Image (cartoon, rainbow, N blue to C red; front, side):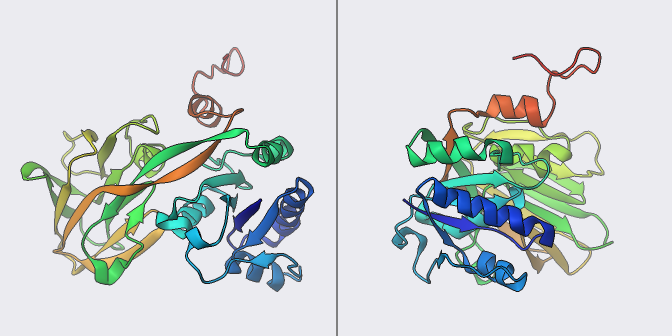
Length: 296
């Protein structure tokens, strides 16, 4: 079974852990195929790479059963961008801290790899959002698993974002920025800005202002069949448009069109993990310091 392996440059002390993780894949009868970026990082640290590398063909032509992200949630987002529209399934092995999306921990690696080898897993479709204009800036990387966000640049004044749902006017947000989050992204940037948690397969999007100056506005959940149209009104000449971990500068008077993407990301779900247990374990839901960890 050929599996792609993707990773970012990390602290040099993590390299032996990454190497051991790849070696354990081989021990379970899997065939790891590394990305150029991961191989280059290992080589730079003096760890010669003896495994095959992904070539320049599209991901759906690489004959991969799935693609494994080795790192944290940021690495998993990079992996989602890598697999793109190919719908190659994605699994995250967490070497970072919180690891909300990358939920295979080092102490469960052996059982996870055994489950992968024997096909004891399911696939969960996660919706994405895409920006349907600004092709000259985004090219084919116009989609995001977590969110599309608009943000003021540096210490510039707040921006006004006029929002329409389809043809209907919703509101004008005077804020540092605005987040359009998917259900998956509801536990990411949007959550830190006071947004609600959505179940991953909910057919909805969250519209959430960043540090709003009109304090009577709140995060708003809308069905994901809506096309969301933004009109920026910034005092500075440029703003930032972020698609997960990718960022581009756009004109401060831009119009942006956002909608649910026509393709999905297929996330590998192991039998031992689910979204509700992740909420309890990662966000400490139900934790009472007087009585210990939350009960199942």
